[in-house]
Image 1 (tube, rainbow, N blue to C red):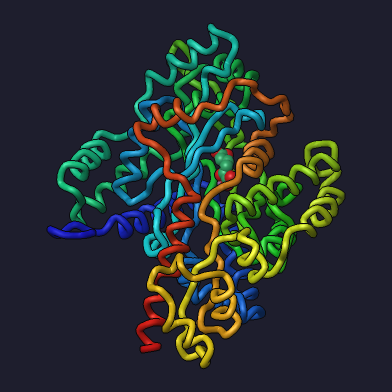
Image 2 (image 1 turned 90 degrees about the horizontal axis):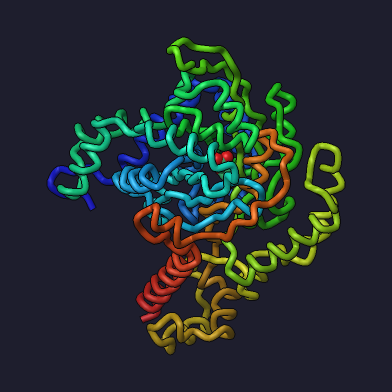
Length: 477
Ligand code: OOG
Ligand code: NI
């Protein structure tokens, strides 16, 4: 909460997200075309779908739609991750969730920095998927040492950014002038640098291990590797991309198209091949190329409960097993058919998703809709919302005195993330790393535990029910 002339962390996050978008549009002009396409599709979708427009107005997501959604970076060391946590905290972004990508052949583990509650999320939904390279998964010890030496020699934060982070921690906030300086200084860490601090030979050796390792170790800093706007119709965007000369990835990751979108569907345009200069031992530069940066689009749907998520994971695995291969350009259509068929087992109306406890919902009071019977339930109701039994809950929903709206999924999906990583690294390496998943080690590097996303959604749902009961009881008296 702002005081003493400090600006709110939400305001700093919004300013940073806008600055990041401007920088990336200048760096990757194709991303601008993608933003235009998404804006066009969203406008058309809202014009055609009044029910969706009303739902997004009820949840507070309508005004936030045009803002940037997420970006991604890859870090090399524990110290970098710990300082990044402190940097994001200045703008009210905290680590939520743990994603282990090693089983999907990507040698990283990750979290997502984001705002925690509905109000902050609606103010600025900006989030950053942040991965830490697992050098322990490189089996060549000499190469691992060379990679570590290159990472230890770099400093990815400007002195000014670090000073402002420390000042913010000490004082509890930043003034408007200091927050403007902070946004500018922090942005430097995410900038693309064409000159790489390592030799072409080392780059090639790292790249031969895994292209991702070269992308992290070979550069001065963790350049933002994509930004992802949110669309309301990802199939329309996927078709529109090709029509506008933006080369799309072969398949849309995540669940199939549905009446009631769940979790997250994502697609991207392929990474650009960019000119880089490698530094030789004698200080001269050698020309080369690097492929890492791309644009992504996502469509978000309802957050799933543990029960819903288990069903999602089972049906996704079923479709992939039936396909018998990694989804790619050649089997894309077949995969989409298998996916749709598998997901026919997932209920596709909000009331059933609610009643079966598969998804999270906001409860909202509609006092005018209460009839005689529901008024009776409301007046006799205990003020503890947990005491509301499912029959009474059903009556209130049927009468319309209580309304449900899906809580949007704010997080990521490891299988999808692996698909995004792979399509953009042109990595055909599909052998899983066998190193054990290591959340404890990740949190130790981070310097803090990650938030449990399920607990956050549960709290949002519970708060909305308590508020609704309070409002309905107030009007029933
Ligand atoms: C991150 C890939 C994951 C997503 O949207 O799932 C991701 C990366 O390529 O660094 O951004
Ligand atoms: Ni992404």
